[in-house]
Length: 111
Length: 119
Image (cartoon, rainbow over all chains, first blue to last red):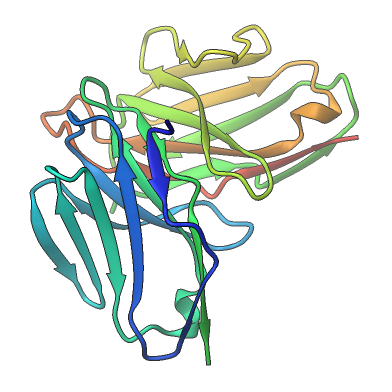
């Protein structure tokens, strides 16, 4: 079983809609969860991080964490064409600082 | 804040050449830096963890004699790909974090990456 799994893409949404990205992780002791955005040919850019159960909002982005279900999600509200990218879910290990990345979900926002 | 600079952005060189990539944290001190490799259409693969003043910790399957890592200061880590061959062609990305400074869970911030092409 992979450590971090993301819902398979690609995900296509119309402009203005909500894009919903899901991620599950296998290590129940994981404590820190991150969402990165990666444009084609570029390096990852931090979007959100969350440590506690519940929701965390930052502008049009909302991260949701449920440690009991080992599940973290990212919602993008009012999606814009500039949101078209691959979104990477990353999880810190229980006892170290290393990140485990999911395979990524590619999002395309249709104008 | 938390800007990470990586240089060079692109390298094209002949097989057998050694290539050095620099990673700098510009506005913070990073006791720990990470080196990743990413092949097309794949996610990031951690190669090694670089700690200032000590030897790097390599992931399983990564040849430490081929990928030399030096972390001589709190703001600079270098990766040298020795005797590079076409199969080493990839996108190499470093990251840095405020780890070890009372901020265990601080995010990693990535450099812009180095695209390495070995002919």
